[in-house]
Amino acid sequence: MKYFFLSDGWTVGRVWEMGGLWNEVAWRRKPDIRRMNLCIAEKGEKLWLYRVEDEVIMVEVKPEAEFNTESASAIGQVVLKRLISADQAIELLCAAEAFFEPASFEGV
Image (tube, rainbow, N blue to C red; front, side, top):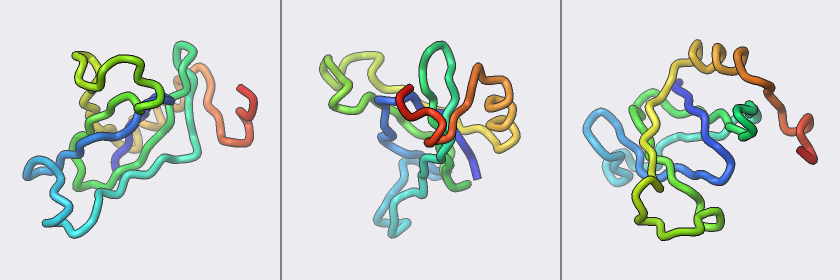
């Protein structure tokens, strides 16, 4: 498994695998990308931990429509995220200002 952190208000767009963009017809399914029940606080932002299958090498993230006040095509509105290993995710969780599970940050 591979991992990445994603801020509230952002969502996954396109997904890349070794052969290029993920092709749902060829794979016969969507890529397995799941938000975990852990997030960290970094510079006042909540960053959620996501898990992806090994075949995924990179994901595009973009603001969700409800959080995007400008045009979706504006420069700077899309970011490519490189994925990290489980060890790197654990290091970031340990080094974070704080980390939360769903029940521990109600009302934050």
